[in-house]
Image (tube, rainbow, N blue to C red; front, side, top):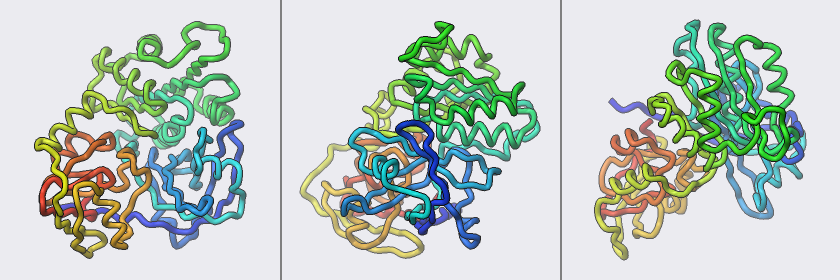
Amino acid sequence: MNNMKERLEFHQLEISDIKQETIDAVSIAFQVPENLRQKYNFLAGQYLTLRADVDGEDLRRPYSICTSQNEGELRVCVKKVEQGRFSTFANDILKQGDILNVMTPSGKFVHDSNANDNVEQHYVGIAGGSGITPILSILKTVLDQNPSAFFTLFYGNRTNASIIFRKQIAGLKNVYMSRLNVCHILSDEDVESEIFSGLMDSQKVETLISNFTQPQEISHFYICGPGPMMKGAEDALVRLKVKSQNISVENFVTAAPSSTASGKQKILNDEAQESGFIAEVTIIADGDSKIIKMNSEDSILDKGNDALMDLPFACKGGICCTCRAKLLEGKVYMAVTTGLEQEEIDAGFILTCQAKPLSDKLVVDFDIA
């Protein structure tokens, strides 16, 4: 029997608080009405998709939740990026009392808070820049819910002033003195010890993990940050013989295809992509179905929404998996598969923002988890 997926939906939420975390990053808290609280229950590490009209354009962007499950607050962090329309809007324009469309929580970069409670576990977070956001949620949840758990955080930034949540992390260290170890690594500022200086490249990560942990005894590694840092961290863990099932990676931006991604693409595209033909696509969503016709140049997501189906999406870059669905019939081509694990691809799941038809008949189901 297939598991049915809970519908992702937008609701209008009021901004209850905005904090300036650094010169170019804010955290935004939302007031969740009592009748929506269950819908906005989240797992540590998940994200919210924010939606707003910015200069006449309907924009959606996913941002990770930075609070723990027990804090009673729904808060995300938004770092301003160069030429980032939504991030600039969030940092410069939004204020307390404003109303935003906020999608219910989503994301697979999560910690299972029901696993191994009250058992001594050691977790490691490897973060760079705004990649601290989901890892902070996981860190707080782990230490709060499991009194026997330990957490080591390796956090890379340019300078001390650019450390997002610096004071909060210091406060957590004071609360969990014996169970939380924090290592800040700065690339553009002098520090006393060489091990905490420089870029968080693969060699640096390997050195840090080897010096401060026993990698074979770590229950799970969580990695989030700039693409090169994450790739280097993964490579370091491979050299340290860490099992792949003990590593979780969260991508914030579309990266160049890795050798693994290329392998996944080959499986999906085992025939040459045709052009010029018309495919008949049955899309199932929210218990309803609609048949649309499309060519091989369009994505299933775009054509479905052109047909007013209101299909869920956020990044449209093959990263966040908000648009994930199951291909029940037919074949598709996807240029980017970063957001999917190989097991998901083997089970028939696709990213509809990337999926283009390779066969003349497709059946795609958004309701299967």
